[in-house]
Image 1 (tube, rainbow, N blue to C red):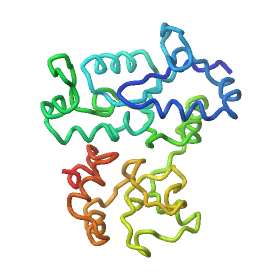
Image 2 (cartoon, rainbow, N blue to C red):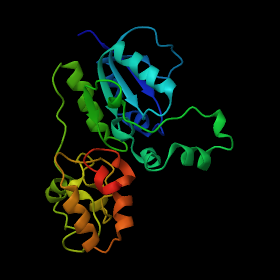
Image 3 (tube, rainbow, N blue to C red):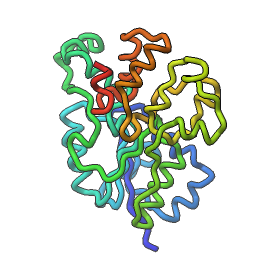
Image 4 (cartoon, rainbow, N blue to C red):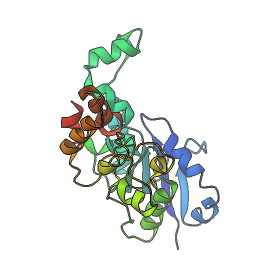
Length: 251
């Protein structure tokens, strides 16, 4: 089978999603039987020359230059993957969208005149995305599933139910209903394996919204669990506040 030509790109983000791929060292040899890495600045100095079968993009768009770059990547790639929450919807950096551009620049830069910055957006704001892999970062098995799906020309199996389902599969007690702790599991997309609740920590929502979450009801439940309205807003803003599903509760 001819290898897929793949590229890995980083915009505004921390590079943690790419590190998650590198953590898959036990499966990388088999993975490299399926793909040919044509561009990946984190691991190679090779320039991007050929068009790609699959482009993985980490990070959100926050500058005019990145708008131009994501459009070029889309034009030169058959298949585009939003890799992680920043690329999907902005993630933690998107918290700055809840202040004005002027306020954000003054808070960060000694001379805002040097800055060409815009509000944080996921890459789907500017181009069509074929697959979105939520998570901060996405679990490496999810990333490998996307690669295998592209190689086999089939849709990858991605979870769209809530973290609560994963908790039930692990026989975890419910931190929200049994202990009245402010867990975001009911409205958060699965895929992490319920790692935080399994370690007796509430879900913070790092996989973004599940399919059709009832965010309004969740906000009320969080208030009943003891959070203030400001606390609730911060909960919804933290990872996915700029998504349509969470924005009303995050404002």
